[in-house]
Image (cartoon, rainbow, N blue to C red; front, side, top):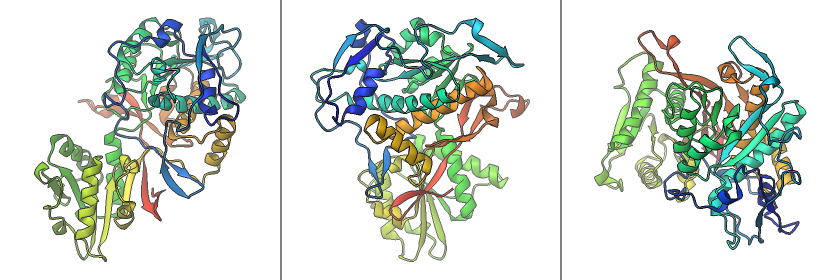
Length: 492
């Protein structure tokens, strides 16, 4: 077991990080802890910082606005020394105080239901997160920035474990550092006993690692819950794979449904740059329109396709698409901040002050830092997002107090997500056993950051969708947020 000797001052602002590092069970040998993984690259260098669907702004109750969370601590961090200590001195974390060193004995099966789901006296959960301990340096002024996602996620999960223990849900938790490396991930799948014996696996972060794990457990009695990846086609025909983050297709369908609920098809203008990957996204919207309208004719919806040669949009004529006597709705499935900024500016200067304009965008728009939010206000911007922490919710406020009292820090989106996932799936194991995924569709629940409303994803065959093999399970819940009074609000 690897732990951390804490040399931080008692009231230091980095108390949160210190507590997490002290308590985390790395499930790695001391030699592996500091060895640089071969072929491993920095997350930011590989473009894997975030998949398309995500957000980093949180509500600041003091200013009443949304602010960008700076993940890395800005103040100087005192020295942290790593050393190997016996598990007898500092037992690994568990929801009920049980030592995590062993694995579940088959004799612990209480009963088995008619689909083969086993109900156990306790359940093994492996948490695969990129703590990136191999990037730690005792001389660095702060903990490695890209470790923050894992630390925040894990801190929220720990609070959920406390609640699960009061509900008599017994969890044996192993926390494993993937180091964001496919090579490390492959080795863990072969050799890590905790991972091999896990009933439920949560993680990892990178889509490539998610694919490795999903394919490895496809035919086993294990379930993988991916908290972050929004990619589709990760592991086809895999009913053991659960995707928490909705795909781009799901977001597109939600936007089109919302638009058609409030506006007519002839008021909608689809906007895209003349690039194949971007134009292909439009098909998700058209397919949903066909489903809702019952017609294959999409001619009522206008298209504004912008060539790369006019990327600045200075020469683009937006005015012909604006109906001076009616409402115009632009749907822009793009997350290029430069392009979106130029487009919003062009629409704003082209419209009449009395024109009614609405613009639908993607969740990444909440992260944009260069765009003047006055455009969001004037153009009635709506965006899709799978996550939203309502600052007025009593549950959110309670969690914020609990988190601050425990860690001395404000919870980030990852902390909420870690709490929601650990709590929901811990309860599902208790309620439905090891094959709980087949009960997901009849057990939706509202959580702190989102709603879990899972559906099986199938590719219809000649026999129809009813008998098609399950590709995976995906959370289909998506919020539509409106920008009003200079903040995002739910507009479902």
